[in-house]
Amino acid sequence: SQQGEEDPQALSIQEGENATMNCSYKTSINNLQWYRQNSGRGLVHLILIRSNEREKHSGRLRVTLDTSKKSSSLLITASRAADTASYFCATAAIGGANSKLTFGKGITLSVRP
Amino acid sequence: DSGVTQTPKHLITATGQRVTLRCSPRSGDLSVYWYQQSLDQGLQFLIQYYNGEERAKGNILERFSAQQFPDLHSELNLSSLELGDSALYFCASSTLQGAMGGYTFGSGTRLTVV
Image (cartoon, rainbow over all chains, first blue to last red):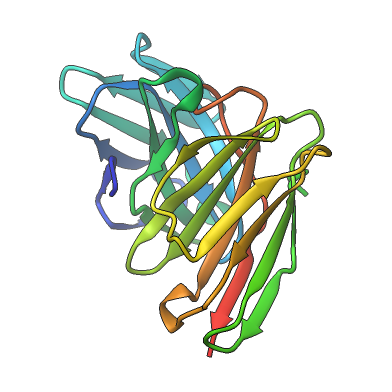
């Protein structure tokens, strides 16, 4: 079953605008990760934020984590047409070496040129 | 190229048949994970191996089995195939055990059962 639930399910924006995607989860986590998937391709790891971190940046990406609300957001600034893809949040339950990543159903982002 | 190699890229087979999907992890990664992606179920975790040992099992059907070999490549065997097994099957690898770090995904095997 899905742990993370992304919101919205689909997002369409103009090139140059910012895109904000949200993820909520149910149980305590060790870390939360965001991945991108271009149509029919493999997933690409974007960023990982640990449960004791509140915000992390990587290039045009900014991720926040609020463990009290069990939610995370991914902000892509100054979006480009090449950012068009599906974005997934994945949570790592507390469990050490035997923990696994559980993925949400994803958000489809369309960036119009 | 992510460094994780999956073969074949596409597979079309009939119901009742058996297939084997192969995965070579990124160089140096000891952990291998298998996921199934379908439109209705999303990405479902199947099974995890670390250095040849099974470490975690997810929603893997009894008709499915997997193993990781001494050279660290892994195979996912799907038998008595049904139409509903049609999906994208991904292999991923990681340096760290479990979900402590990011995963590197292969480009997947698209299985079509007819």
